[in-house]
Length: 243
Image (cartoon, rainbow, N blue to C red):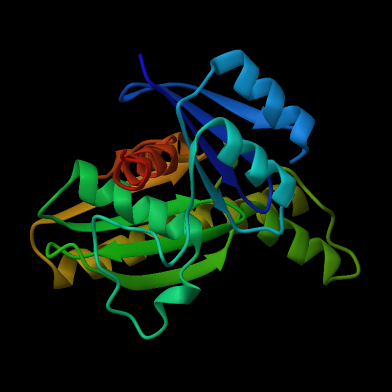
């Protein structure tokens, strides 16, 4: 049995997906990027391969440990991919978006794919049926929207998400929840409808921790997969960590 560790270091959380052969087994949440924490994961799972996608400045000593203990690959614009990036500045594409594009091509080859990722920001990632990552859009994520209204006004409170919010809010709290959560749903539906009107053979994947909740609020047909980024990292690892 071959084990692969897929590290995803985002702006909000540090996570690791564990694969046994091709099967995703579990997600681990790291408290920090310390060598000791990663060493414990290696001792527990005894992986053969590892890959890191990071959009933050992380502990480089952790990378050294992974290189020593596994066949390690750090995702970057130099990575071998299963798609091309005919954009103006491919080096500026975030590692997380590369992983999502790789998953789209791996699981939905030959389709025009839009991957919507719900994280600190919402990213809209379009990969055409010729397996070219064209680009997309980036907008503020849920927590960012809640915090922005609180921090940039004198009176609005900081509220938390509640999936039972009314679309027509009846007080300040529910008005804010409706504006953020329903607003995001309408935004996502709008982008999906735009792409669907321009491209046939079209497929949509919604991912991120809140994907399953938004999936039920969207009018458009989508696939929801909260582990889609991990699966993209695994596919890239297989390409780049071959003996």
